[in-house]
Image (cartoon, rainbow, N blue to C red; front, side):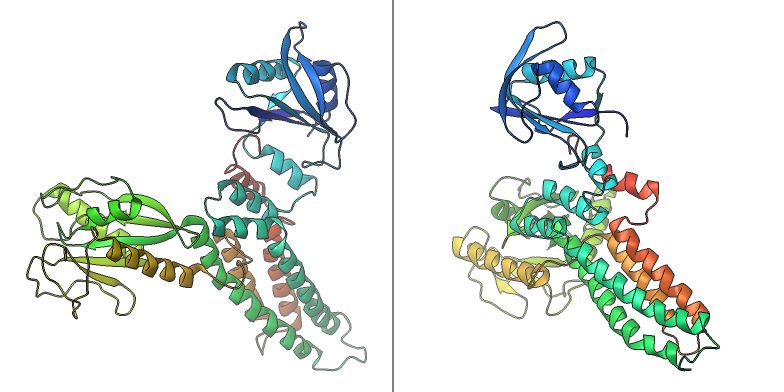
Length: 434
């Protein structure tokens, strides 16, 4: 990393202030050439910035952040400019003319990782924090940036080292006065660790759903009121509502926030037998989306006599609403709760019920330590290795190797051991400037 990079750290467009970041060995020299001299470290200073021809670019606040005490661990600079697009473009052109390179997505954070300022789990937390849309996502991301998963991984690794020491004592000193059952003494360590890793892997699913959103599917026959309900919950006209059956052909997804959690609400095609090829594809997609949803809300048209049971209802989990009670006199029955999306009291009840469901599914005393599929796969791999090491008939040599492989899997969580393609995939998800 001998080159110096730069990038806007704020979104493009007009704004009161725009921030441009620099990182690398030539960052200080670039600031000196733009502003005439370096300010005192870590103190905001007002400077006039000029390009190579001496033309005034802007009057800006500048920060000089010499490494290693910076975000990336390298010499860094921040330029707090006036936020006009022409101002930003002029400064970027001047930096490019000085021989600096525009940063790739995630390159600042990758340099922080490679310089030991963050581990990989913390870097993923930074990405989640940038993307956070809800209070729950913010809390979970801050928890990971703060090192909760990293701390847990260090604790697990210490336990593995302790177990490995027991096995290697049995292997390396077979003729010494070491108890014959020394390998069995690792069993309590492995048993406790396996249980903890299994729990962490199971909690990963909750973390993934907090990040991606709790999925709710509106299901039912055509004209049961699915699109009307979607619009009511979204507080906008997200779906077309007509009296024509089969208007909705594709999945319409709307993001919501309920109880501080992200929710993806989907309006789906009405379920019925049809010879129309396009509508049949919509029905297939509706069924597929509903099968993967965390919750299905089945809507039945209360103005139509229905005797056949709804397909695929999981008793005690899905909600069934008999709709349009504002048009006919309906009462709650075994077929579902009478409901109208046009009545404020009904809508308030449903929102409260959904918020309770989401909180029960995604809430907890604290955010999960592991939050991504990558974490879960590595935790699962470590558990499989440790279960084999804990086998009653396994030789100490083989058990020791399985413990080493489990430790390697856990090390890949924080990037202590990691392949280049994994790092590329993680940091490619970042925005430019971070």
